[in-house]
Length: 67
Image (cartoon, rainbow, N blue to C red; front, side, top):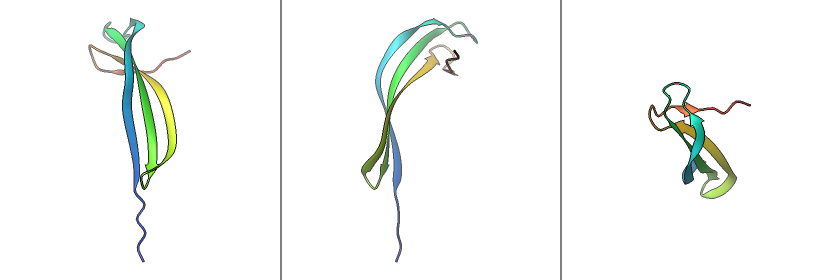
């Protein structure tokens, strides 16, 4: 008997908008992206989360927000 578990992570961009400030590396414009991520096990959704990611439009670097 063989059991195969198929796990999949699906990410989808919900929206984009311009964020205030400039890139600390090149001075380019920063975009904020809202991303929905969903983990599935055999086509059944297990985990669902919406995240906001920041990136520079000029150098395409992902930026991390520090408080």
